Amino acid sequence: MEFGIFDHTERKSGQTIGEVYAERRRLARAADEAGCFCYHVSEHHGTPLSMAPSPSVLLSVLAAETTRMHIGPLGVLLPLYQPLRLIEEICMLDHLSGGRLELGIGRGVNKIELKFYNVDMEQSRAMFDEALQVVLMGLTGDTLDFQGQYYDYDMVPMEIAPAQQPHPPIWYPTSNLQSVPWVAKRGFNTIFAGELDHIAEQVRSYKEHLDPSLQGATRFGIHPFIVVAPTDEEALEVGEAAYRTHHDNLAHLKSWKGRTTEMTRTQNLKAPHTLRDAIDQGWAAAGSPTAVRDQLCTILDKTACNYVLYTPVSGNTPTDFGLRALDLFAEQVVPGLP
Image (tube, rainbow, N blue to C red; front, side):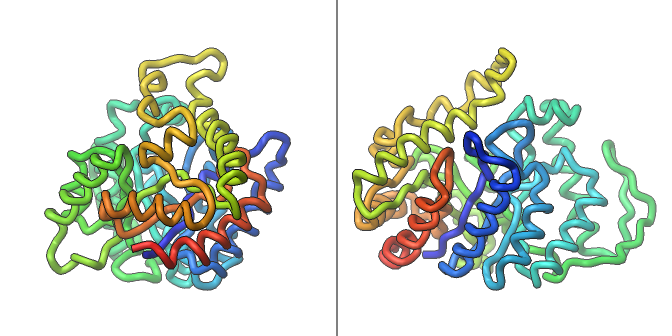
């Protein structure tokens, strides 16, 4: 079983921005040594949930700090980017990392964050579809020539190409069962979300629609809230506080300056309110290495995912606790997973 790191790059109370980035450099080096497959970075704007609103900037630093581990956004919110510049940044990151880039893409699910960039949620799907077409054309061709509703390029020379041919592996995370055939037919890697029965259904659909030549060659993963410590008691004590802080950060924009919208009122309503509830419902695994291994085995047996995302520093998790947890996870949990 391979595992990856997923990092929102959350800012803890009292932490400076520089300290956040120094913490991530330490975490990336530790993950590289622990055998992590990829360090994935989220993209969010205007919230303590993420201090990496420009993932490529952080990833360029993490690429320099590591030697084996892949790096990548999960994912770039395509409607917020000028596709030509994004194409060039993708190529740069792929070369700077020595061909270790994993390219996650997304449309953006937070109406407020899209509005910050003057993007209408109602248009974001059409913008995403068109931007993806442009990006793939630019990564695989010598010239970018495209005329669409949102983007227009007239014979732009592509002087830089990605190190990986025809382009870096693409990831598209989703919780929408209806999106799964689209993801699978394009051979994209993915991370599924939701209740375990729902994820298991997504996995079945993904395998059904995946080209036979790609069976066993793609990654389809899950991202439980994982907390590991030498004892169950310590993991639950630290993890409960981290879980609450993380979900406060997820909900930050819905209450900032008294803002309330239908979108934010309905976000994350399915997520359990406490870590203990999350463990009981299969959304989380927390405890000693043995307990976490057993809980994850149950989750993986039920969903049949072949990749696990882990966030060692989530919410207000202390850095040293997270680094020790990463070692325990890599050395004592992962080897026992199916």
